[in-house]
Image (tube, rainbow, N blue to C red; front, side, top):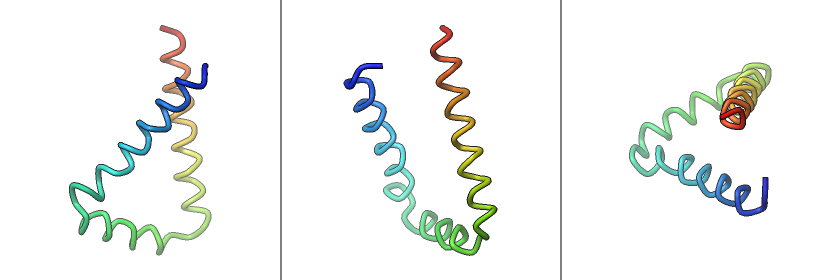
Length: 64
């Protein structure tokens, strides 16, 4: 992976992260308040799940 691919992936992540608060600020705020109520273990589980799904997607894309 070259540096251009890294920066493109980072830019795409920022675009995707910004879509929900842009399209539905109230819904994003409600979701964020619910996240604040989760215990640390629950947040870690969602973080780990996100990492694993991302790695699987990267692996599948690299096979093609």
